[in-house]
Image 1 (cartoon, rainbow, N blue to C red):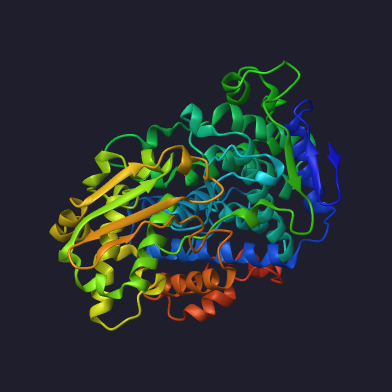
Image 2 (image 1 turned 90 degrees about the horizontal axis):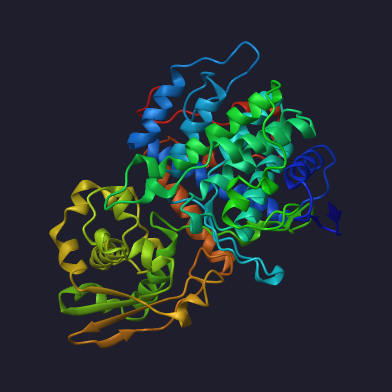
Length: 510
């Protein structure tokens, strides 16, 4: 392990699992200063994730409701303080609370995203990932009695490990779900937070890499199920189990990244004394992967953000388009891989579930067009604020709306080819062209960095993300402003962190 001013390097020729263990312990026990911009971004991603989770529970979404009910039926072991679920002060089994909370956070598929891309360092594997795992940090803080500032470090640690792994190893190439990077990160961070030794943390990572490797089978088929949305939740649950077993003395396989039969080398063969990648990790300042992660400005698969930005720009420049949708003859979209395969799959032209609809570019575009018509009729300015896709936009009524189907019939999506592919994952290269009976040919401009992208305008993004939080929790809590204040982690006492998620949510069991 070598160190520069603000990063450390775990070379491929070393035991990187043990290096991660040492990194986690040092990051928590001998802290170096973290940049104010990084901490602010971390707080924003956490707040956004909780807003998504609260909304999903208030709407009684199936998977988080089932997992929360399962968690509340358990009790902590005598050696554990246990975890708590969103909306309840009742202690329950830690791993069950983590699964329930992470499932709620992820259910709407509306929280933060990363694309595993750091061109300056030549790390462009481009694996996906999401800010789903903060409940693991909160649960560990509750167990270990950590204050808010230390809890923020733990949250950042999870994002850093999974974010950097996404830059160097593309799990999807081998039909493995991206949440596995989250399992590794959470197992390491949770074990370190509870005082695990290097041996114990390495064992936790080894178990995660050997016993809990999820396949993308959960994302196959014409219609998606609860398994897709809850994948991160089950990964987080497995991570906590791995960590707790390692802390109890269970010995997992060592040196998992160089293990010839583990998922890394078996998929990318390399010399016996190497893993397939070097791993560089931030230690101070703003040298962290979170600064290259992206916000979503509503409910949609993030690969569609470029197309949405194209529509927003069109409505701003041509507001009359919103009142003349019947004159739209054709909508042509050019997009990159892997977006073309994921959200332009022909099967998704007729979604029947919300999980499929929010991964259907035709549905997302059609619903946005209809929202524009309604907003214009109300005299609202057209922009991200008025066109934001929210849970009601994916209701059964919306999915079966014949107007949606008619618009989808006019949408054509094409792979833009190498010119588009080369621009991803630096950006989200997409163009939308509309053929209109009276307005003529509209759009066609390439969108690269839609609002919410790490390279988009930070102030504008923050404003829309804050509005999104307000809208998501408006019907679930009495005072969104008070909830926002409560959820700020920095500066909180250990007692406040332990009860952070025990606020009431309207209409659900406490």
